[in-house]
Length: 116
Image 1 (cartoon, rainbow, N blue to C red):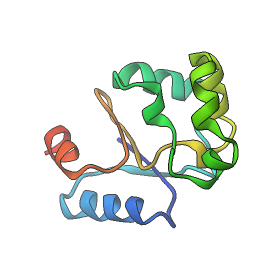
Image 2: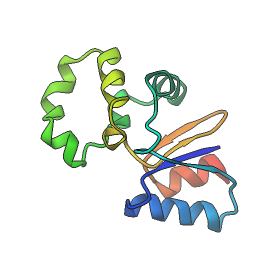
Image 3: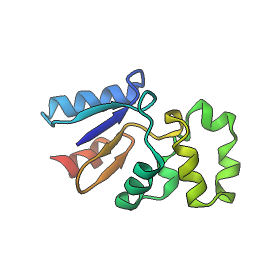
């Protein structure tokens, strides 16, 4: 399982602590140093069954600076995925990618259902 995070993010820190406390093995990946590629994002999006908007860090400064709230509705899925692949700070985190599921953000109830 891959745990994709931004180490300075408090939500990511909480999620990592939860994984460690529940003795769940993972490989950690820094979302900025090793930004997800277009191909990875496309595969994860398809596997997740989630709306593409859930992959965007809508509370991030970059999202707000780029005024993506107004731009995303006019962009194709392909354009949105390409945009996400340009900067890890645009991607919702933490991101958990396992063999049979993908989770965006840290919701303890959802993580418990999927991983425990």
